[in-house]
Amino acid sequence: MTSAAVALLRRPETIRARCHALLRLAEAEALPHFALHAERLPAAADYVAETIRQNYPDLAIPYHARWRHFAAGGVDRWGALAAARLGGEDAAAVARRRIDLCVVSVLLDAGAGPDWAFAEPDGTRLARSEGLGVASLHAFAAGLFSSDPDDRLRVDAAGLEAVTAEALGAAFQVGPANPLTGLEGRAALLRDLGAALRRSPALFGGAPPRPGGLFDHLRAAATPDGLPADAILAAVLEGLAPAWPARIVLEGENLGDVWRHPLAAPEGPAPGLVPFHKLSQWLSYSLAEVLEEAGIPVLALDALTGLPEYRNGGLLLDLGVLSLRDPALAREALPVDHPAIVEWRALTVALLDRLAGLVRERLGLDAAALPLARVLEGGTWAAGRRIARALRPGGGPPLQVVSDGTVF
Image 1 (cartoon, rainbow, N blue to C red):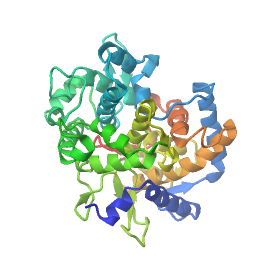
Image 2: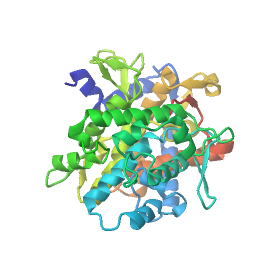
Image 3: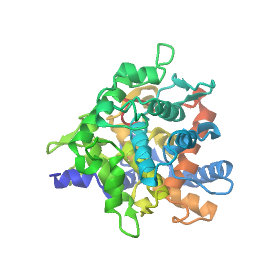
Image 4: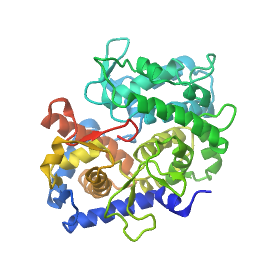
């Protein structure tokens, strides 16, 4: 039985409330690491709106989902794979395979580092999130995550438990000249995912346990009107909790992407803790797309939050909405649990809510037409990458975070 405090820290409304509370402290000049320059938010909204118009002139913006990376360079790799090898399967079977792929791919997406890239057979080289996405798709197509050589386009517990750093490194073309940040952590995360699948047959099924079993669980939970987005996140957080590295444990439960900040929720419950669940929320956005295309409407998508990662957070730093009180921190590689990183991520979540409203005004769209998942895609993530490339060779983030391959 999940405790009340752990359940609280898994709710998206808690993420939002605690991040906005830290933003209010920033407005009062009461945060230790960052200063807020709210007068620069309108210019940031202009920059994001301009980026959206460049990328999506018709404003037909998809969700910020893993599926965008599989189509890097305008090549529909998933569509080609499905057409070649999944002909005749019904919509539910295809959705299960898409969820299989999406779960492992999202979990493998944490920052690759500046020196890694993936080369496709035609010579196309892709780095960062696009490279990781395409590499994971090739590994999935080759059957790396399946225990059944006759059913390679599947992910199952036994297949995941057999993944080694060496096998994953070979699939991702890792070598001395092509180093991938957090390779051991990524492989361990996949093995732990396999164990997590076995622990939750109600979510993942049992013959065999596989991420795609979530489709049947979520379909059963849907009403005729559809499925609330927070129900997707709840299933993801419950099912994947055992897979995350043990960082902070509360009442025997591994909290995952939850971190300490001395000024967060001092009166409790669970005082001093700020939840983010970045990969789980991005996975939820990605699964929402699968469910909708399988005929299950997803409701109240904006109950989920913006994603506290280095593109969205970097946008705010690079455009001067935030500034470091101690500029020397920008010259250090900071661990992900450093209070400055926790503060940065929390301010990113809260400011994305404000930025989204300003962007909608500039584009003449309301929240129904431009939910946060589309603002991110069009959007703040793309704008963060754009400004980073303009300011720094290689387009790296303005703050360096030591990643273990499971957060950024």
